Image (cartoon, rainbow, N blue to C red; front, top):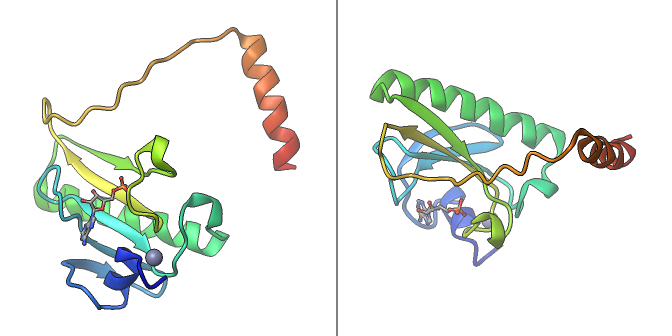
Amino acid sequence: MSDCVFCKIVEGQIPSTKVHENGLTLAFMDIGQVNPGHVLVAVKPHVENIYGLDDALAAAVFQTATRVARAVKKVFAPEGVTLFQANGPAAGQTVYHFHLHIVPRYDKDGMHLTWPAKNPPREQLEANAAKLRVVLE
Ligand code: AMP
Ligand code: ZN
């Protein structure tokens, strides 16, 4: 995709600060740095979001993320690490090339995800799980 910023990074057409690279993924520093050591793991091919990942890309991205998370823990010794991944504007996606954030976390670091749990009755869980099982078969 000629107008995709992460494709340009993968192809070396615009600068990035690389952390790790293999055949299917590229890990580089997020330019915004919520905390020091905030890394993005992107797939190399242009895939817009999670729905377009094949099994090999899905596996590769999580393998790289796991390695980077361990490195972040070793180097920055954060109090925690959050993985964040957005698909679509309602989910907060701003760059439409699949990537996963690895964010070192600290108490009161200002990063918030509100989690409005609805705690529905078991019957509702069962009904919705049944719908998903049909599609997953
Ligand atoms: P999102 O799509 O919400 O997961 O966020 C996209 C992320 O990409 C943001 O955290 C940006 O700071 C980051 N970003 C955008 N452009 C660049 C760039 N040229 N180099 C590194 N990170 C970038
Ligand atoms: Zn792209």
